Each structure stands twice: as structure tokens, then as C-alpha cells.
Image (cartoon, rainbow, N blue to C red; front, side, top):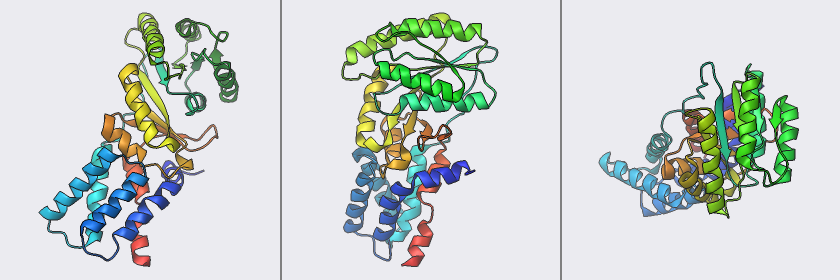
Length: 312
């Protein structure tokens, strides 16, 4: 079985090919000049690092090059890697379970990003680690969302509390909290609707859900995870900004990282909103979800860089 770093390295293959290999080509055996920075800018933008983050990285490299009197482009590699490490920051803290009580996690995100899949994977992970888990099917707007969550619940061996399509989401969450408490559960995972195009309605619905959760379990939800699809690149950052305004997001789950060359969005989201990426998804398998490590991400992104330089 692959370790976390090997999974991350494999998941970043497309991004590494589009980003790291291109950077290696740009910085190989040449003097630092404006052309170098322009080509780096194109590469960073192509990896969906984002315009603001790209400008920050370029400004940082130019300042360090002048300050340290760097002459050859390959000397910019550790500067770039260090700047990315600074943006990503320390590894996020692991989930802290409430002692002798129910821990509640709320999941938000637009339809189609892998929210239901993520909830199923996380339920399976914690159940296999000895936690009693309950799922709340709070996206009552779509019948498919409820059905998919039931299927994932069966796969994970976890009970799903649900009502009919069109039911009040807060009522579903209330029932789920009551059921979780009655069953002595450790963790409640709550799905929510993802119709961001009706922002006012969604905000009102989420506020009602928050009130119900906080009334039943003061201080909850303990985490609010925004699920984003890595393949959408810059659109993921736009979604993150919108949800951050209305949903009190504490962490991001980035899905489908293995299917895109736009893994640079991890850096862009962190720089734009200072919200940590806490989990990453690599595929459709129930085990394809891992806690995010800033250190491992940066290392995996630049894996093999020196080897590429020597081969030319």
C-alpha cells in the first residue's frame, strides 16, 4: 500500500509535468533576465497558481535575486520553493475530537465538486479508526444527493439520517444530531446544498443550520469544510471566496487532484484567502482521501527537479 507521500507524488504527476518540468526547462543553464521571469509567469499561471500569487512569487524571486546577487537562473529554484513553503505555511492541525461528546463537521460546496464522495470517504476513514460516525443528508434540494449519500453510507458502514427531497435542511440536521447523540456517536458529518447561484437563499439556509447546531451542541460545528474541485483551477478560488463570505469556512478539501495539471490552485487558495487546505482527494476509491501536508506537497511538487536538470 502506498504511503501518503507516494500517493501525493502520484496525484501531482500531471501538475508536476506541467509545472516542475517546465520550470526546470526555463531555469536550465541561462542567465537571469526578464525573459526568465516572463516564462516563469506563464508557467505559474498555467498551473492555476493565480495572478496575485504569481505576482507575489515573481516579486519575491526578483528581490532575493538582487539581494543575494544571483546570476544564473537555476539559483532561483530554492528561492521559488522557499516562497511556496512560506505561502503554504505549517501543516494544518489534525481534527480535534470533542472529549466525551459529539464532534460536528459541516460540508459546503457547489454541486459536482465531490462533496458527497468526500463525506463518504471521511466517514469510512474515521469508522475504520474506531470512531462511531453518523451522516446527515442535509442537501435536501437534490434527490440524487440523498441517494448518493445513502450509497456511500452503505459502503462505509455508516448510518445516514435523511428525509424526503424538499424537506427543511435544518430539520434533517436536528434529527441527525438527536440520532447521533442517542447512538453515542463520536462524529456527525453534515452535507448541505450547493446551489451557489441562489446565494441569498443558501445563506439563509446555512444560518438556520448553524443556529440549530449551536443550540443543540454549543460551539458546533467544530469544522466547516469547503469542498473544491481541483480540475476547475481558478474557478475553485472564485468559489472559495464566495463561500468564505457566507459559510465561516475553517478548512478546504481539494478533490480530483490526480486528474488535473492545475494543482497550483492549492497555493493560490491559501494565498488568496489564508484558509488551509486540510484534506485532498486523489480518486474515486473509498480510501482515496488523505490529510493535507504542506511540507509533503511542496516536496512532491519539486520531486525529481534536480534529476531533470542533470539529464539535460
